[in-house]
Length: 277
Image (tube, rainbow, N blue to C red; front, side):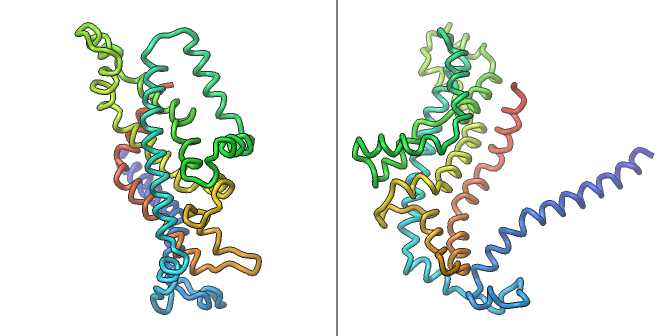
């Protein structure tokens, strides 16, 4: 009887999940379909969901005229460098807060974590003034340095994962004469691949989609990133939807590939980290 009752419940759950999946996927699918339409076809009434024919002119214009390839390389370079820096420094800080013993450790961590409550808008002007005073405005370093050393979220994520790893590993290594850098690099780091993959996806997406800070600090066309390039398709006289959707599809590809490559580790990292309060 229990099995008979569970089957309808499972069927209802599957239907709800399929409906929610459809709702989540529909905007992405619409973006891809619209990128293959001409501007006139997008604005027709009644609207058509599928294009009458596949139009590749939007992609050709975006790649050749807008030079989105340069913006793509700029965004990719900045995202990869900042992500690598955040993985290193957040892992080091998380390991220190979780496994090492030093004075004021808890107070320092709580104070650092409290900075998450400071709105990012409040730090824009101080950051810009600092970058201007050291002569780094309108350079890639102005986009890399503020995010290179990680943030409270990444440190918190790594600390929570390290707290779930047994302290006996460190104690055994210390008895064998290993120092802390060796313990961190050779013993604990191989165990942190799931959470490192999770942090890498978050960091990459945050850097890849960043718009306001590059808009403020970058003036040269050769240094502009993809979000700034996509904003150029919008003007006071309208929006070029065909070009905007083509650029959006190209901008989604690296994030989608990064998530697919790290999907298993991403889910495992989130699940394991959530177990430790």
